[in-house]
Amino acid sequence: MPSPDKAKLLQQFLERLRARSKRTAPSAAQADGGAAHGAAAEQAESTAGPDIFHADAVLREFVRSFLIWECTTPRADAALKRIASAVVDVNEFRVCLPGEMAAIIGPGYPRVEVRVVALRGALNHIFRSEHRLRLAHLPGLSKKAAAAYLAGITQAPLFVTDRVALLCCGIHGVPVDGRIAAVLEKARIVEPGLKPEEVASALGRMVKAGEAREAYGLLQTVADQTPVTPTRVPKSAPAKAAAKRPARPPSRKSK
Image (tube, rainbow, N blue to C red):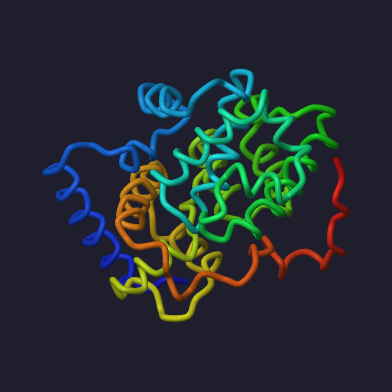
């Protein structure tokens, strides 16, 4: 259970970030807290190139979240635009080999090899579940059902599914990857050495219901301003809720 002092430190830190954001022009990262909704979604969509997601904003945000994980929002949006320019639709991207996906995203993209293997596995999981690539139905489910569906996509880092859950389904939680965890560690809000999923669990208890979207947007903005060389980035995509589920054998690659 987070201490009252840590919760107070977090609120003070977010207040400073909030004041700083009011003094600067809104950036794509600051608008990120409202992605897939309203004007922020329209702005993001306009910079992403052709619509390869067939108007499925949730699926688009899922792929975008994969690109933001352990990277920055501007680089993710640039990569998403490269993907949209290279394939007819997201299903064509799904059936690409990992090396082909990495070449499209860009060989210099952070952790590109791990990223494309996990993304390909997650898209294949969705395709097998739905017999096509679609996530637009998630906001229409109960929050419990939507959370369970996303938790079942075990190929995706927790940051990805938490981000989609928050931004697209209104499910409480603060997405945390190694970069956001490093921001909070530097601010002395969390103890050194905690895993991103442990930090996310703590933040979920410290941030009030209804304030998670703004909190995440502010933290993502700070992380976006940090060079993409955090020392705490894990060596492989983190498994979600590993302590709560028995270990599974590696998923088979499929088209």
